[in-house]
Length: 139
Image 1 (cartoon, rainbow, N blue to C red):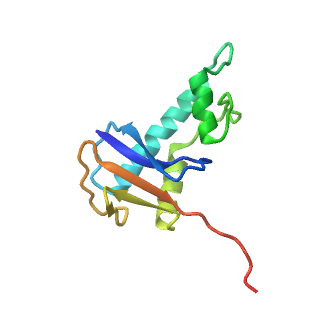
Image 2 (image 1 turned 30 degrees about the vertical axis):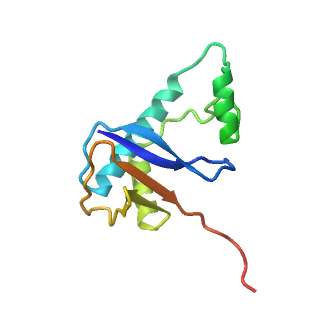
């Protein structure tokens, strides 16, 4: 299933949301299954990326431009070479959703609770909004 995400670029001064494509191997029917598919795909890609080593690191001009637009130009080195635990990642993602750290929208409709059914069609747009906790004092 091919879905699109609306993602705010981290570190970008521009106030727009870009679309990114993701291809899922499963067809989720609930929000919990959708989160599971996405987290599983990301953990798998992260753990596989640890094994990849380049003999000589280099960046093309296009890579430099893309990374500069995101706010950080680096070789993408991974300093923590331990594999990530899928179970812990799923637990964290579910807890963060239940605690209101982020919201998920399918099209313009907010996804409800984790076990409520959602209707996804091929090429649907998902929006993930992460909320930032503000710290300060009240006088």
